[in-house]
Amino acid sequence: MSSSGPTPGNPQVKALNCPGCGAALTLRSFSQAVTVVCESCHSILDAQDPRLKILQKFQVATREDPPLIPLGNRGTIRGTQYEVIGFQRRTILVDGVPYSWHEYLLFNPFKGFRYLTEYNGHWNDVSVLRALPLSSPGASTLNYLGQTYRLFQTAKAETSYVLGEFPWQVRVGETAEVSDYISPPRVISSEKTDKEITWSMGEYLAGRDVWKAFKLAGDPPRAVGVYENQPSPLIGHVKAVWKLCAAFLVALVVLIIGFYATARNQQVFSQSYSFNTNGKTEASFVTDVFELKGHTSDVELRTQANLDNNWIYLNYALINEDTGHAYDFGREVSYYSGYDSDGPWTEGSQKDSVTIPSVPPGNYYLRVEPESEYYRGTIYYSITLERDVPQFGFFGIAALALLIPAGVITWKFMNFEHLRWAESDYGNSDGSDDNHGAGNAAAIAGGIGAVAGLIGNALDIDE
Amino acid sequence: MMRNVFFIYGLAILSALALAEYRGWSLNRVDELKNVPKSVRDNPGSYRSVYGYYHHYTGGK
Image (cartoon, rainbow over all chains, first blue to last red; front, side, top):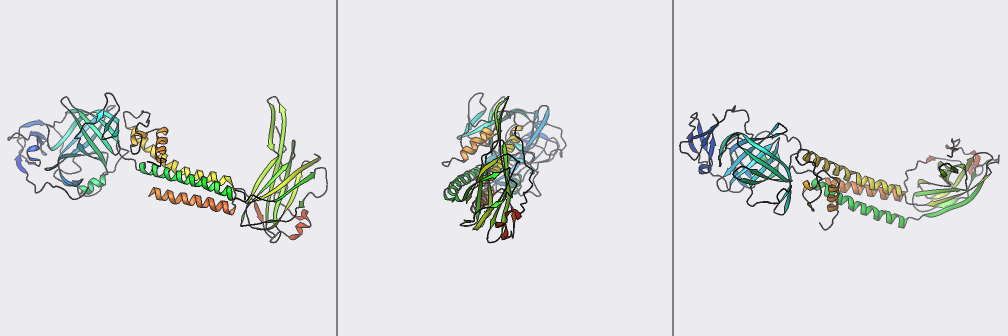
């Protein structure tokens, strides 16, 4: 919307009086008005008749359903100034429950007519289509200018309230079969009567934009729920976030390869020992001193023991000879095997490994204190230490940390689509992606497979 | 906006990962003790591990 473009110019209203109640009438669309509704007595008058013949009277309290944009107000839509000249309420019945929306008829003497519709705070800028959409008989989709629209609902709409002037023979109580096909933020509607089918296209507008265009005071009504062609606030974000996520995952793989390729995996100590479980002497001992080189990094300690239905527990302390700083930990290695009615079984392992984090360089030795069951013979075991070993667990955590936000955004997007299609007559459709490509939120409604298609599109770098 | 936030978030994750790998962080918990006397080398039995007297599993199926 902008402030340029043709304007209705100075008002050249035609002064008339209602033949029903004598109230003054205003004709804003001049000779294009076919009917005009008296705002006082709600008589529908023939605007083409010089004597304003009364066509219909309907009883309604004047203040029952006042327009949110008063008749005569002017606003700029798509660069053109329009004047509100008519207002009608239309109602459909769904399972016996009436649902009503409002239509504002806008007029510009150079551009003609267009409409604003409002339902529960959701607005649409509507104009009549110049070309027919393409559709197959019985199909739940139609195509217009290369864009596919999915059938959202079909209902019989009844005009339940009118005000102002209209370029057609408007009547309270007249009905039309209305079908909406959506491709957010657009909707194509067909209105079928006994005489004709009218096609129109609406584009979703935020209430604040309507208020701004018509310079209305206060705030627009709060939008309730998700409207049929309301664009998902996340549609662009889902694709962007998945693209970024994919890029980060690729970077993560590169990092994994890089760290594994450059990790030193330097063996700094390896020694075999035996532990006599029958012995009664002090079991603890210390190893020779070995040097840990390079920057602060991890140390992986591996223990392997020739156990058979036995265990060994090793109290370890990696001690810096110079500073007296010790890393104290214990590891159990146990291995059991046997045979029962289910067949052979094993439990545990003869191998164990543990990572000691962030060990600064220096001269170290190990203090080892083995324990085991008494009188189980001699246990042979070996200890190996490696410096600077990549930790795969961090890569998994990083991958999860990248995927979770993308997943949450996708879930919120799916929830939005679920709420949209919950209001549809065709909400149980499978949501299969028959609209390959970007942009059509309807095509991905309600299905993980469809979201997978969206993600697939997001990852398509040629898109 | 969301794209920028996720971009910064992703960079932070990868940076933290790189730092963790470079510095050798680990998910394992290891107790650290200071000022272990040098006499431990001569008398290993004098050292008292915080993991001593561990209750060992002696199971099997």
